[in-house]
Amino acid sequence: MKKLAILIFLFVNFLGSSQTINEAWVKEHYYKKEYKIEMRDGVKLFTCAYIPKNTSEKHPVIMVRTPYSCAPYGEDLYTPRLWYNWKSFLKEEYIVVIQDVRGKWMSEGTFMDVRPFIENKKSKLDIDEASDTYDAIDWIVKSVPNNNGNVGVFGVSYPGFYSTMAALSNHPALKAVSPQAPVTEWFIGDDFHHNGAFMMMDAFSFYSGFGKPRPFPTTVGRAGFHFPTDDSYQFYLETGTLKNLSKLMGDSIKFWKDLMDHPNYDDWWKARDARRACKKINSAILVVGGLFDAEDCYGAWNLYKAMEQQCKPTDTKLVMGPWFHGGWSRGDGSSLGNVRFGSKTTDWYQQNIEMPFFNYYLKQKGDAKTIAEANIFFSGANEWRTFTQWPPKEVEARSIYLNAGNALSFNTPTNANSFSQYTSDPAKPVPYTEDVHGHRTREYMTDDQRFAARRTDVLVYETEYLTEDLSLGGLLTADLKVAISTSDADFVVKLIDVFPKKFKYDANYCCDEDTLVNYVMDGYQMLVRGEIMRGKFRNSFEKPEAFKPGEITTVKFDLPDVAHTFKKGHKLMIQIQSSWFPLADRNPQQFVDIYHCDEKDFVKSDIKIYHDKDHPSKIVLPILNK
Image (cartoon, rainbow, N blue to C red):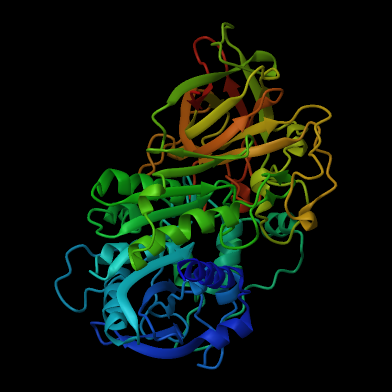
């Protein structure tokens, strides 16, 4: 009898693990309810809940708060995200709750972008995303049928920001939160600015639709801008100034006006930095991001660091995989563009980290202690590594120097008065990718940089072929000694992995044959990390400073963390340029208000990058010791 019971148990579990989750399965096992949950100030937020039909046990709640709609609306209509993106939660019979945030879609109230957190609330009118989450959770655990009183929250991108705010609510039923690619800081590194440079392409494309006002709750979305061409480089170049772009945007989009009216890192921006609110968090945290996330790579790394520094009692874990924005919830994570990663990293993450994390805190199932503090995929080596902290204890900061003759070396320069020079022309900015595209691509994060290396306004420095593997894990810092002929300029630094001659992927080195591309990989220049710095912010984001033409000065800035192994036989390359178009807006190269200047303000600038014994330019590498 005992053996029979074991066989029955194994058979039932086999059926449960092998079942196909599709629309028919979801409708057979779940029913949907729609609610309007009242907040403390009387505003009602539209919420839908997908509830297991199984009433033999109580179920945990997993919640997503979103400005992108919990559509489709109607209790007989189910969102495909259930069986495409969240099927792991359905297998575990979670109650799935999705809520339209305040002022969006079918929720009442006024929407505010990255609404600032109010630490000391004095009345019911002091509302923020944390208070809305608290009120929603309080209602859910009391009113949604058959829940077990344990709630988790997760979300990708903007919903990642709402996840961070959820953690700050500290509702006693909230046990686990996972901010994924979280919007965290929109002036220094996420989405719409990088080091003060305006990420024009994403901002205009996004806010021309998302930012349009919604006068009343609605199920109908707003159309975005109709681009007259699929050549984005040509469109933005012909449009010219940001002032002209604002005319195309129109007068109705408030946040676009805010972007134009807050050119420096002032108190308005500081209030919208999600890291500043991370003081007390009672729930467990799982921060997730992509090494090659074109939107919010900065947010994942830096939210984790802020929580570690400011919320020590919190159980905080970090996962960074080889993914594009949200790639851990769609696709198999085996490749990006031309670069392959050798395994289905998405499946591994969902099975070994995401579900064990939520199951432990919401179902008391398994042991979350088996999940490491930092779970990081190293591209190049194509392997997962675990650490007790991030950046790792084993990292040594070591400088690699630009040298004459396009050399890159750990040896300091010995020449006197040595520099490389190029002319940056706003009329012919360096493109961010070789191909013609209508919208910003996600693949550019690993794109081949040979097209840029061939331009005269891009400087190239590279090592000899490596005689042993070189692994980098942590923050990169560019420390350049420059002189320019004008009063301002941008500086783009790119860290590149140069593949060997005659390199070719093995035919079986990718999991999804549909993603295989017939591309010449021998000598491939893989972008590992790139970042832009608006020169006038080199000393302060709050108080920009003009350059003195011809005077040698330091431009020092951080690039987002990396986790990459340069394999033996590869080269490490650094490229430097002064435009990255139309990813970032063009710098007029004069100390002016870029958001309101005219075409006549755009001028050429002669850029000198010094690499001599008195003015050594370098990149500080986080070298991971073996």
